[in-house]
Length: 89
Image 1 (cartoon, rainbow, N blue to C red):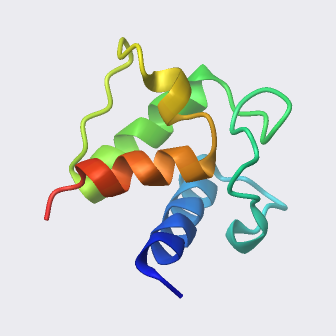
Image 2: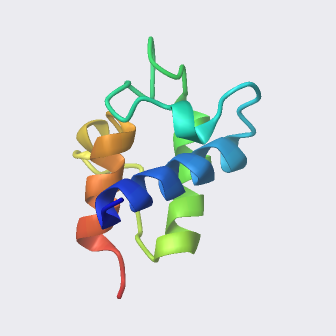
């Protein structure tokens, strides 16, 4: 597995654990599936919880008023790309 796929799975696991998604296996989350709405069905409170978990795990500050949030949280793949690009070493 390459580093991006490893990180994608790591973030999927963080998502499932943080949001207590019952019946959802991190390994089975389609990386292109929308996180909100018709996809995983997450809401704004889920985004806040996930943002705090990502900040704690990867040192990335995600602000609620960031105009790029819709793109950042569009899918597991887009979130992983943002984390990969901005995480502390």
